[in-house]
Structures are given as structure tokens and as C-alpha cells.
Length: 336
Image (cartoon, rainbow, N blue to C red; front, side, top):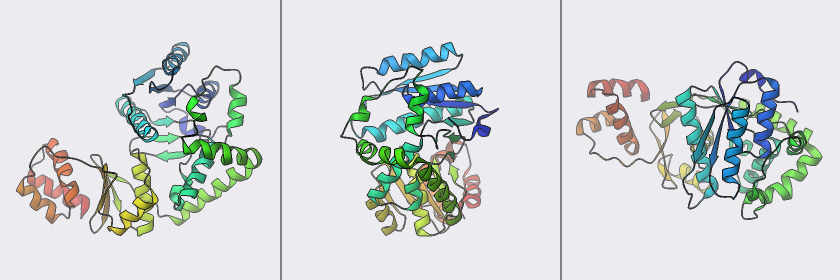
């Protein structure tokens, strides 16, 4: 198998997102063979009989090959499993990355996964940015996500991993998940016949997306994400990507609602989308445990800070021990 982006991994500190399934086990041994240094992180959701065994297998591999292994026993997920599981997983990965100064998060997504996402978004009704989904390299605030299997098919992965132990996820056969319908009815069959053409098409579309969409710097103020306005449809695609990174995929109706409200609304009672003259802001909903000082309200108003995010901005700067004068200068430099 020919892995991509190996130069991005050489001489860097890498963390592999592991599940004990065929994809991540293949990634584990491929990286070993190539001499790329990495450590391992795994989330045990406790949803299947083999969950504990899979976690133990990850730890056994890491002991044998002298890798650090970070394990999280996830809390029970009551509803919306896929979305909540993704959020738990990425929060865990990012916590490890920040605390241990990793440069890259390696994930084992492959060509079948990319086509599956493409077809699901196509059927739902999505714009170019959303429909293309994840790229082989994705820049986050403090690290990069690297997907070396992005052009490799699932059948190639199975063939490579036939000599290693791995676990099959029983949920992959569960017809309640829409992704399984698309996987077995459409994407796997298409990849089997047209993998080279599909891979090349994704390459062309990714290049064209870069030409069509203005590259914008994504900025952070605490955990508020913001960026300069461009055009409504490019802006909504950027918001779509940001909220997806936060662990939620917005629907076509929610996209319409964001546009209808002029980028000033709440999404799924979890996320805030706001704007001022120059910037768009995305944040998780925050319920303050304090009364906002009148002096700061005046400062926020003068600096065009939208009401829904004022409390979160104030708390962040208050924790930094800023005076009101320092807050005023800081906000003026950031947002005006």
C-alpha cells in the first residue's frame, strides 16, 4: 500500500487514533514498517462485548512495540450515538495533543470512507465544501490531522491486514445507521469498479475547491472561532466545517436558518452563530454564572461584540486578569 503525506509525519510527534479495527491496525503496522514514530490513543465506549478486549489489545501492542497508549473509558451515551461519540473522541484526542505537544493526529480514513461521505451529503443536499468532506491533511488550531490512507481502498486494507489480528465492529452491519446503507448499497460497489477514477476526481475537485474558495485565516479567542466575512455561501460553508469540527453536522434546514437570520442564531441548542460588520463567530452555547459588569457591556457595545458571545469573551479576559482598559484595547485590535 502506498501511504500519502509521509513527509508530514517524518521527524514529528504523532498520535494515532486507534480502534483495534482493520483500518487502525493496518495503520499501526504500516507506520511501524516505515519507521515513523507515533503513540496511540483509544476510546472504549463499552457498547460491545469486545470493547474491553479491544482496549487491552491496543495496550498490549503498545507495550510490545514501546509506544505510549492513552485510553479513555467513555461515559454512557444516551442518544445520538455517532455525534456524541465523535465529540468525546476528538475532545480526548485534543486534550492529549495539547498536554503532550503532539504535532499530528493520524487517522485511518480511506477512499471508501470519503466516497461514502460524499454520497450521503449529495443525497442530503450540500454545497461543495461539505460534500467533499475531509481532506488528506487538515489544519487545526494546534495540530494537523493526517490521513495517509486517503487514496487506499478498504479491500487493499483488508488484504494488507490479513496477517495481523484485528476486531470487526458489529455496528458496521447495523441497518439502523444510514452510513451502512450507503456503504453496502453504493460506495463499496463503486469503489470496487472505479477506485482509480474516483480517487482522481476527488483530487481534481479538491484543487478546484481551493481555486473557488478564498483561503481565510481561522482565528480563535479562547474557544470562540471567528473569521472575516466573504460571501454568504462561502461563509456558510466555513461555518459548516467549523461546527463539524466541534462534533456536529448541520442539516440543510439549519444552513437555511443561518442564512435567513443573517448569521445570528442558535443551532441545535448547542452552538451560537453570530456576526458583526467584519467577522463571523462560532461558539458553543455558554450559560454565564455571573452578571456582566456594566462597564464591560459598554466596552462590548463600542467594539461591536455580539450580545450572545459577550459573557464568554468577558470571562476569558477576566481569567487573563485584564483591566477594563486592557479589555477595550484588546477587543478593538481583534474585532474592529
